[in-house]
Length: 329
Image (tube, rainbow, N blue to C red; front, side):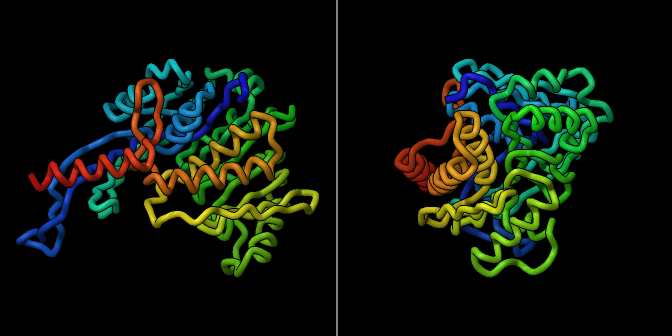
């Protein structure tokens, strides 16, 4: 485990799950009626990536922008007091309302999601955050881009370029609405859809074509490597020097993949900070993300004491049984 903190840079989101059961349709429209059993809020976006890394016991610094509204204060409160796994917030101002993603869920599935708030950093939001020092002292940097503007900020990008030039491992998890990675990052981790959007052309058929796609993006982005995640098919990694690897994912039951990308990218950053090479880090993160999905994905992440963690599969099944009993009693 790295003694130096992992710095997570990106757009923070407030995730809210409203969970219940559906046994009837609304009488005035063909819409399901959700009988609410529970409501839970958790960090989302870059904040989820940071919380999951901190949940491993690794110190984390989260660089983000937050609006001074009620959802922003609520999100900051969810990250406050994580003393056993320190998570330091480095926050600049945002505008347009904190982005809140609310999922209506039943039977382990999302029925509907509502989004509100823009969550966009104001110009120069990072001016007072001393990002050069923060990134230089990192064991690794994870850019968790959700397309809201943090990764596009001029000072943020300059600090990331300097960190990469100094040899700090930089993992860039891109977003279709976000900027391209700065040149020189250690590894970029798009999913297949993001990789296709960036490179253009038809989706690849098979791992050989996926590796060729990753190779085109290595050249375009000037990255040390590109790791394209393929869901249940694992990932492919192409390096700047032409080397490659194809870590496979274990078979897991079909489940909600929400948050798996954050878990994967955070796992890559944590492994690099601990001294692993890119291929080893990606293979380890593929296994970790598969386990995360098998345990129920982001919807099962809860604050336990001073950490945000997932319960075991047995605990998750027990909680679901209790929820069903609560509804039917």
